[in-house]
Amino acid sequence: MKWLLLVLYLLFLAFRLWLRRLNLQYLKQHGHEVPAGFAGVVDQKLLARTSDYTLANSRAGLVESLFGSLLLLIFLFAGLIGWYDSWIRGLTASFIGQGVLFVLGLMLFQSLLDVPFSLYRTFVLEERFQFNTSTPRIWLTDLLKSLGIGALLLSLITAGALALVQASPTGWWLWVWGFLALITLLLMYLSPVLIEPLFFKFQPLQNEELAERVKAVMGEAGLQVDRVQQVDASRRSKHSNAYFTGIGRVKRIVLFDTLLEQMTDDEIIGVLAHEAGHWKLGHIWKRLLTMELVFLAACWLAWQLLAWDGLPGLFGLDQISFVGQVVLLGFLASLISFPLTPLSSVLSRRHEWQADRFALDLTGESLPLAQALVKLCKENLSNLHPHPLYAWFYYSHPPVVARIARLTGENISH
Image (cartoon, rainbow, N blue to C red; front, side, top):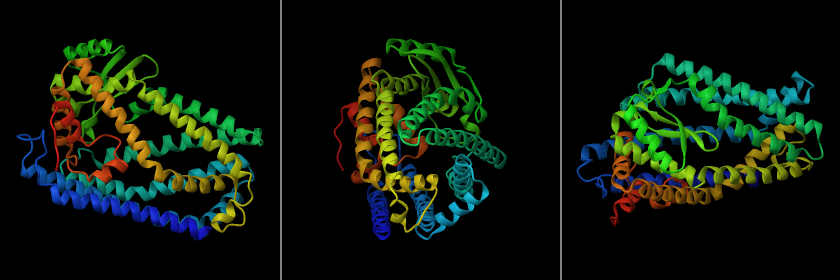
């Protein structure tokens, strides 16, 4: 069974690599073409730069993916997980302590492995394409903050979950699910208030006229906006974005300062009307509910499998700790979830189409949102020519050329 799992993982890896190659070949064939809706906005120089950025990102991602896959296979199938588990158990006899140390060690190791890739992306790749505005000091400070916050949260969540397992060994799956569902909601509420301000500086939107327009449009959508803020994202990158936070009817809207520099007020209203559509149409809660139901089923299945003595044997191990077995289950879950990726992508894209339609109905015009999408692609060097199969499998958003075509009523084909 060990070799069957290994072969299955390698087959999925080969499929991912094939999809990536297919996507890049398609870009090389069509990257010089100006898509419908982009005439007069992009030229051959910009298209070439967009292709170069996509290729560079893909190559960097390929190296990182292959390196991570190699280490994962060595850890799981070459016996390292058994050695690591024995070492952790030798440090403490505490069930909870073993689990916390196990996951913290893995987190620290993974974070250290990510360092060279993060440095390359930030100070080489992003710098080459003039996106990076960060400094080594900001990068290092962000890393240390992320490690500290991640270690604290991971320790508390792991300790809490294992305490429930210890308290209810015959029915812990429901308690653990409830605990983790509560943590998810708490983080949705607390992250914008406690965590994000540790990395970014938030302030009220300086354009008061735009802030009032935003609140008025959101009011028409049935959403109460408590604050409209801007954030100093330009200290780290020139990439742009906007997002909503909040639970219930009261929302906070955050706009990147880079977005404010790149777009007109009408275009920003179009973008926010789209985001309002996700909330008004219940997409956020539907996704959250779906995730929690899937996780409920996963907790029950994990409870069943962790009571089975044969789980370690699937990986050629005689025995391993409870948390070690959870890691093994995580690997099995990745094998199950990968073929389901297109299902999640299709549902997400459906929500995006619906949010576009909502924005059109709310504002009464499609041009500002279409123009905003064009600018987002132009400023972020987004791939305008993804392979249809690659986009179908991975894209959570419809390809932007198709979105603009639908918004403007144009028909396109390659």
